[in-house]
Length: 393
Ligand code: PMP
Ligand code: GLN
Image (tube, rainbow, N blue to C red; front, side):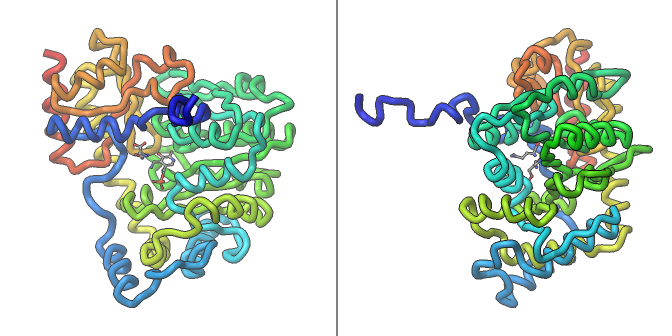
């Protein structure tokens, strides 16, 4: 057997293929469709933040390798943000780590904290990089399925408890949750925290949509619950909060032992990244509350626009309490296979969406659900809605 007759991609990654986001964004481009698939805003974040990046670049700040943990200005700003928003104290020198987006934070946390064979519990549907990173770390994923209940996808706490075994090392939490838009309530988070303490589990919590919560929902960091600070790795991202997804600036806040562990993996992934952008994000995090309020209100209006349009077009809409995604059920349209529906949608209506089934181990549980992103200009959403209404007729 020659070395190339064996499959080139190793067994850990073989099941993953190309990410759905790349596939669907390419489909949007090749068909000229409106891309409500991959979650990225079609307008950039605040002008002053963009200018701050230009200034940093011109002033020669960050053009060479920044320090491994991130530039001190950004670590201080992250620490101040956690304190100002949530009353959580993290030492900028030992308890904050800047990463290449939340994606690297997730990868580094799992690579650092898991031994081969460790079980990781994640909500299903789960963001696609979770499964791949658990696999790369040699872990075993144990999905706990969020199920539709009275208009939103909910966690069954008994199922979560039952999923914990002696091999469970870590809970991988995501709130606000992509793709369902569910925001865990105080009571749900308290129950998760209690379980983590009782079973002595580590928790990695992906809170990249922390500033995108609507109506009476509230984002509460899991690290703030009793017994959680010392066992929780919290992840944030400037991509989501400031609409600069291409800058890939993310971060971790955690107790120093956890940050040291995550940094041990991170230093061999990218070592460092995004030098000048780190200075700009430090300024962004210090923006007055008005920025965050306006950002949320803008997205709320877009959510309402798209939710109303999708309802009129015949979809069942799960109105999200957070994130910039709407999950729909396509069965009222006489469809049941989200994959087939999304592959045909560009041709049928000139719109691209994401089949939620890709975020499931139990594919059949996710089959009828399709996700639309609403982080787009109002005129783009208007046009998408107009096109989607043609499906009903
Ligand atoms: N976590 C979730 C839940 C996401 O939706 C995304 C997508 N942006 C990420 C992590 C990755 O974030 P980043 O772009 O900062 O790597
Ligand atoms: N987080 C984005 C989404 O869910 C996509 C990011 C990516 O393309 N990896 O749409």
